[in-house]
Image (cartoon, rainbow, N blue to C red):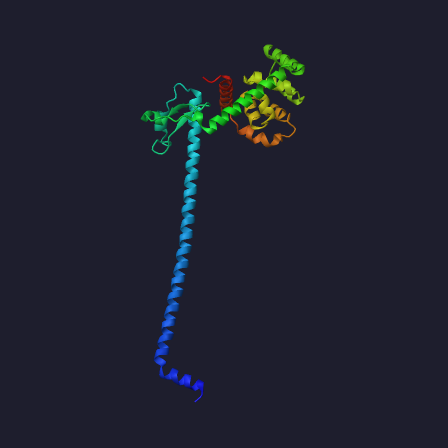
Length: 282
């Protein structure tokens, strides 16, 4: 009897055992594929659920931050309008958004002192932000800016060209002849000193602040300055064009959307900031 016949004979004799082994293997294979399919389905469902939750959380957080930002801007505008009569706690109760159950709100001055805070009503110790890195760095920047302004002012005052331009513009202002047409003429003739001096007188801002806006940030600040004194787009465009690197066409839509009241509130803030900068700390 050959070897193959022996093997076949053994299988026939033990066919029940062989059939049982095959069935058990098939059962395990079925269980393996079933569990793998369940694992893959659970993993896909978990990923989809996490994606949905992340999207919902992102949308909720985005809306919350936008609402908080809007409320803080309103609160700041009300405080700037009348700091003495503004009641932070009462305003927060009426707003129903920035409740002290969620956030602690404080109005901090430029020097780091806390002007108003929701913590004060609970007799909690107010933090001293004056020693924080942010305000120390800000103080250094302010000192550098003041020094630069003083040097620039001294150089400017000793420049005969600027002195003549300022004297001429101041005389026009005293004679009641410093109007928009004159400012537009200065800008179109590319007379920087005369334009800066005119804007300084008409906006009641220091000449240094006007020059910084015209040289270092020509664009949105010029729009605010021009809109606050109700200059037309033609004059505003001429002022923008004093900087050859500015594309005035990019600002026309922003000029049209900028409201007169908003610009004047911003200018008032600039005035307060300039005065606070020049006031020595106590």
